[in-house]
Image 1 (tube, rainbow, N blue to C red):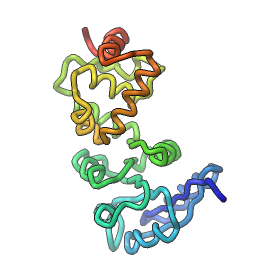
Image 2: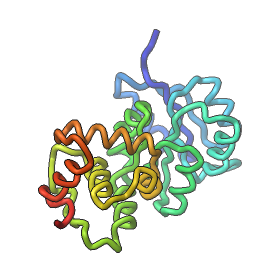
Image 3: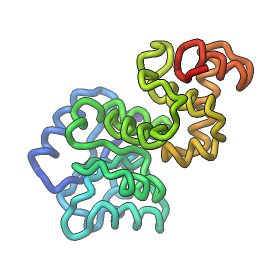
Length: 220
């Protein structure tokens, strides 16, 4: 029995589909089980192929990506969904993630991040490409002068997402507030929090704050 991650692709550009499929076929853990050039009957096709991950373009003929994800939300989302789009408007991203999408990639960073994104969402995490993460974090922190603008350089032990989480925890945001700000689930926030504490050896929130101050994530 195959343990490969089954992936379905939906985009109205055949050249892009071919390129993504070629890339994914080089990964032994992946299997592309189907593709579509429009959004019509996409739900049924995902069900039929038993895809674990759907890569979905927003700008699709017959039924666009927003309509597709709304249909999935109404019927019960049968797989993880990664949005692939030319748009990086935060209002649009927030709407898509609230409808149940698990990841968001801009097309300019897809080639660099799509493999990482598939692994992440298949493991139950939410995923944003770097440019979208930076845009979200800049929005969250633009009015808070306590945040160090060089936070991403502060420590190589933590991932960029973990650096975001620990900084917001240190600014006394609750798990729900962090969830709302970063468009991720509260369970994802808590998972990151536990991973951070394990990595840095902190026993409680005070330990997280001390670490953030000592590593210049926030100003003391």
